[in-house]
Length: 247
Image 1 (cartoon, one colour):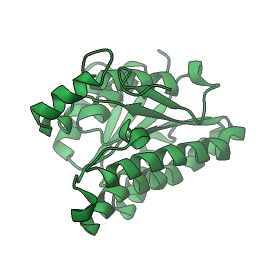
Image 2 (spheres, one colour):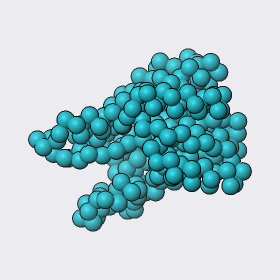
Image 3 (cartoon, one colour):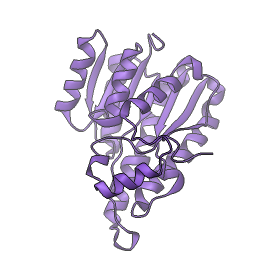
């Protein structure tokens, strides 16, 4: 098991990509601290992991709230003694054309998708620096790379994650800590399930592999970047998009 002895913290773990990442990291041997707002879903996830012999614990955190991030991660560190792997996955959308986009919806998306990543990194980095080993993995988006009409707030937050990834990679490389991003394309989650069938068909035409990806496609990439096999990769954005964006 590639991650035996490691401790991972996954935000937005109650569903979708975060849920798949938590399960995959546990399968690879990591103990997993799962964080999100929905306690019931987190407890169900912990149950799935522990039922197969894994170790996991739930921490109810709204990542848009700084004090909750601080107290929640402090509790995770107290329970597991360290955090080796951080997966910044929590994200929301509040789609609207810029001319109608409310400031509150701009702030909500930037706080949840981008500022939370900075806050989580700040809380775990001490543990990583102390042990001179760490993996920070930010879940960005193909729309943070190519933009999307009606998603100025979302695209800006995900593009910001790419900049944060590269800055952190340079900042902590000398301590054997890597920081990378995974950029999903069109992935079947509860978030994309709300999209119209017309948009879905249009998106499929833009994907050379001709299919929508699944959460496990992202989780597999996260597990690789968390492993020793990826020890010479940092500041990188790994595209998992079926060819939707190349180069």
